[in-house]
Amino acid sequence: MAIRTMRLENDEILRKKSREVENIDEKIQTLIDDMIETMYKYNGVGLSAVQVGVLKRVVVIDIEDGEGARIFINPKITKTKGEHEVEEGCLSFPNQYAKVVRPKELTVEALDRDGKKFTLKAKDLLAQAIAHEVDHLEGVVFTDRMIPGTLEYVQNENTEQ
Image (cartoon, rainbow, N blue to C red; front, side):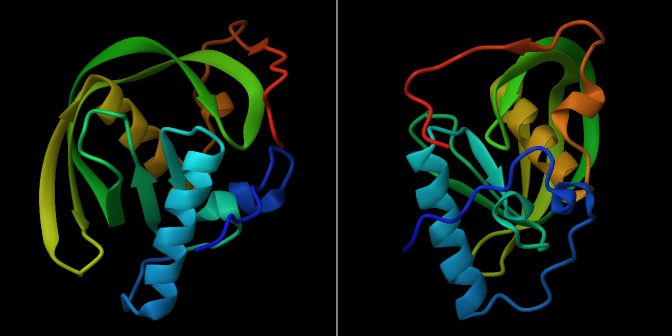
């Protein structure tokens, strides 16, 4: 496992659409492990492959609910319910936070790391994290969705970017 280099806000790769994973091979397994390690290193809740420079539809999320890191390969949001305003940040936009409107609940279909299809109903923080990371796979970043005038820059002496 290895810490991958985080792609930051002005990197044009963050605006590109990620490609479907056709084959869950050793390279994808290594990518998943590296993404999990990188997400934990930078104290993130989620990470998409594009954020570490790989245009593949792979997402890892850990909202610290005791489930550990959840893996989503080729995730597709099939249903949303309700909306709420939430504060959001992003590992690719260090020390920046803004209010965005996200689904209160959603349903996502994806493959797990073994290629098995699953459906997950998520709400609150998990739904928010899934929506945020799936946006990344489409080349959309949270500042595209922010409520105008809510972007804040917060200096954090513990930031390691």
